[in-house]
Length: 319
Ligand code: HEC
Ligand SMILES: [Cu+2]
Image 1 (tube, helix red, strand yellow):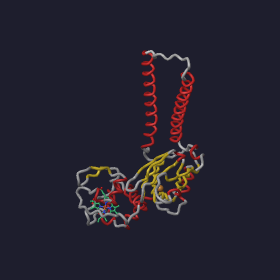
Image 2: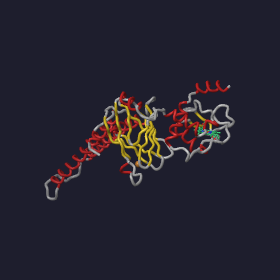
Image 3: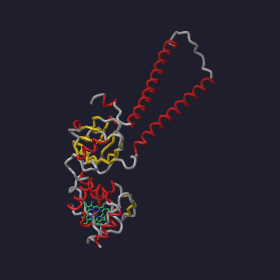
Image 4: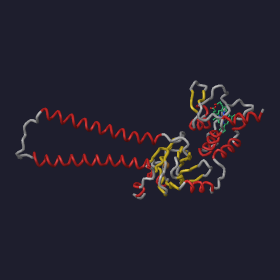
């Protein structure tokens, strides 16, 4: 990995991280210089046999110096904490309406699914000057997505989603790599982050062969896996209507109320026993082994696309 990867800052967040890093480096260097200088000065001045004054230090002077340096370090640390924490906090929550790209890690590759349905492996195309949110999961062990040019690193874990968001400002090709030792070929689990202009991104994703968008791929799976057999209004099995469920509260049979986010929908498919919905027979089958993470991403995208309005119209049709 070339040094340029660590020096190019391809987003505003990266610039902020660099500033903080510079501040900490400057402070550390200043402290090292100060301490070394004092050691040398005192060595010269107070070595054995020198004629330096060796009486008691005045008590008042002692106390004042003590209070001053304690207060100064305390407030400097508070300031650094505030600065670092405010940068971290903005990095935590993606702005609404960010372009959501799914990433599935697997020994030893990165599989990427775009909302347009475009897919790629070990290569992540993103539009510049656009808020991009990565929703990530792993099919096997713990991986860690590292995007040095964006100063971002996030663990990618099996059985749960983790997220990252960024707004790349510089087009170019950057490193994308795994930063968690994940087995034999960990060292080659690397790829490229390709930041292009929004127009180029649109052109690129339209040119991908997998024409169907993610939600539509999910719809096809929803039928082929038999989900629709139960989850259609009017089916013989009493199963919840999935229209409008995304983002809403769900009452569970064990008394908990949970928010139907991506992680919840994911778990409904592969860990149904964890979330039995109140008021329904516990008939949701476990699809572990028959769907992979990429298919779950598509199914969840489809469920997310089912708006409550559509529920009204589809009920109208069946009546
Ligand atoms: C045999 C019928 C059946 C099939 C097939 C089925 N489900 Fe279900 N599903 C249910 C039932 C019944 C529930 C509610 C009770 C429970 O949680 O077990 C449910 C619950 C759910 C929930 C939670 C709904 C809520 O209101 O919180 C989701 C999401 C879901 N299913 C998605 C799917 C998907 C995706 C598939 C296909 C991969 C699928 N189901 C296949 C019967 C089914
Ligand atoms: Cu890995």
